[in-house]
Length: 358
Ligand code: F6P
Image (cartoon, rainbow, N blue to C red):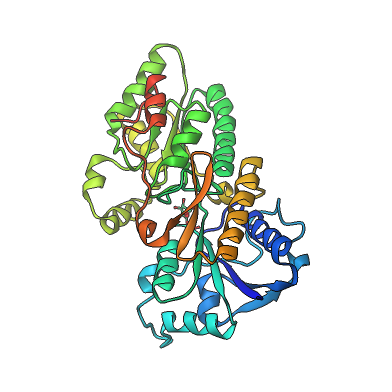
């Protein structure tokens, strides 16, 4: 029997989205040939709400394994607004169900991060046949060891730290490199270790600036004139940690400080060192996926095609150990995977003398 499979990419992009789309498509065409039709929903849930979709053909999926971004486009459509009717008077959930029906979909694949998975779960509970695929450079989706996009971003962030390392050494400066990740510190942790940072500051472990200053001072005493600090976008002091998200953001905005600029400013005030902040930003989400992500994306895509063959819906694909498997959407949606303080990578870092500022 012919199946019509919808695919959308939602939320922030990352390397590996196209590789995953290709993996799904190739596996579906290989198994089902003319018995499958793939419908690309444009710009994430926004396209599903507005009925923006297109029939795709096998050729559309050629040559995209190495391509960054997403051929379908993406958009942030916040989960918390899904049930809210705004000025445009559109009932978003009803509109998404209508598009699904109009496009005669048998199932819908939702490639995205935490927000995407919350909406995927909502649509599944509304009776649609949904399969999630976990993407994000933040690696913060519960139930999977790793998300696609993460390891490419680790490579990029590590390269940034390596490049900063040499200039920090030449100038004997303290360099605070801001790595993406507002809630989860995985990317900062892994790239900080890979890039040989002296301190790693992540949202899960509030830092005391005095402790970070000690790292700078003790390096200076042992004639190491420079210090590398990997600062997560969401790194915070214990005082900031006590604040609500909105209050913390307002404080930062009023002071014109990003997390790395704030660390650098505090170190200048406290130790009198020459401290600079570097924000690589969206570079960390750009460009071609690395080999690890191309392989993982392909494995995830093939597993999703198997789920479609078997009619298994209401799940999201996952990697556990060496096994590609899946979790129920209802078990993982809305549960962010943060760095546990006793995570082995934290212990590894501490064991080689990296400070977390705690
Ligand atoms: O979720 C991925 C991510 O890059 C986060 O690390 C970062 O906090 C956020 O997206 C940035 O979002 P935007 O692309 O909307 O600025």
